[in-house]
Amino acid sequence: MHLTDSDKRRVDGSLSIVKEPDRPDVAAQSDPAVIATVSDMLIEIERDGLVAVRRYAERLDGWSGGEDFEIAPKDVDALTADLPETLRQALDAGAERTYQFARMQREHLHDFEAEVIPGVVCGQKYIPVSTVGAYLPAGRFPLLASAFMTVGVARAAGVQNVLSATPPSRNGRPHPAVLYAARVSGAQRIFALGGVQALAAMAFGLLGEAPADMIVGAGNAYVAEAKRQLYGKVGIDVLAGPSEVAVIADETATAPMVAADLLAQAEHGPNSPACLVTTSEELAREVAVEIERQLEGLATREIAGAAWRDWGSIYVVDSPKTAVEVMDLLAPEHLEIMARDLDFYLDNLRNYGSLFLGEWSTVAYADKGMSGTNHVLPTGRGARYTGGLSVTRYLKQVTYQRAVREATEAQAEPVVTIADFEGLVGHRDSAQLRLDLIKSDVRP
Image (cartoon, rainbow, N blue to C red; front, side):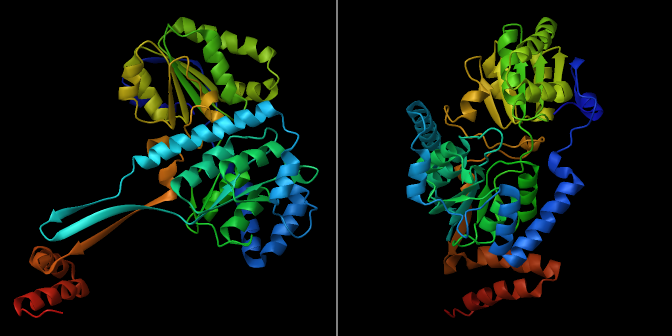
């Protein structure tokens, strides 16, 4: 997530580079070995079904739970019984706020119908998909809020059947906090399955359910590649790569806060890019020093430090307008604004996954579900053409129309003209038949 030479030529204002990666951005799932491995796995699972799923679960997940991957409700109770009450309360809050915002989104999507021309009424409806499979990652750091964003939002959209899969990580059983988050988010069935085999099992309908209409949720490069290859057979949320953060800041921002927010996202993984665009040369220098200072005391410095070293960038620009130009080229997943004129950026920025305005708004709040917005967002400049996961992704926007006899000429005559020109005689005949009936006053 940094400027290419082509990008720099497109920026009208002036900019200087304080720090920038010396390599092009390449998504991890573009690795040919990842693509080939995932392709082989999907072919085998589609052909052999649960037999292949079990083979991969035993080999990759360390699964030894026998034939059934499902975690029964009583087992969820037992596995989550020892969670601290403070954690339960925090997860309850995140699940509720994310669901509440999703319900607000749904309430602002309206079915309608209206007359287009006399006698022709067209309408639009939002219909939720029937079955969603949500993948809940639980790797080195269990991302507990993922269930809020995927399972909970699907429920808010009106999806009737939501199942989830999460890899076994403790003695062959899923992480208890991930299970708790899934349950409070409304997951109806939870399976101890990880990676490609989990997505394939849900997509191919191997878990005692109909094949999922959509598979959603974050994961590693193999999970992202599986979603890419399964897209078309099922719907997906977004093709997300490493987590990204960018900050626009002016001289009113403080280096400790900017540095802390950049590192908070860099700790997602050693290939997570972080970028600062600032109108203040002094702040740029201070942030570079402050990041190194904070890394010294950061428990995740191995990860965040590698991410900042290899993928971090700092640009100094001559104006807020140029800052907007740069960010609209980068189209970051998360974009924080720490500047005097927040409304200028809100009104003028076009390409971002989610926007965080002011020093009291941080990506960390949304990551954990506390602000209510969704953290499943486009990366790799995908924000140029799409938004993140929301209730709209789970809803099919469909249309319908009805016409009366008296509206025939207004539609059929132009269709005959167009179809004749195209040479599509079947289209012409379909319209002409109705014209002939009108002219002969014959009623079908």
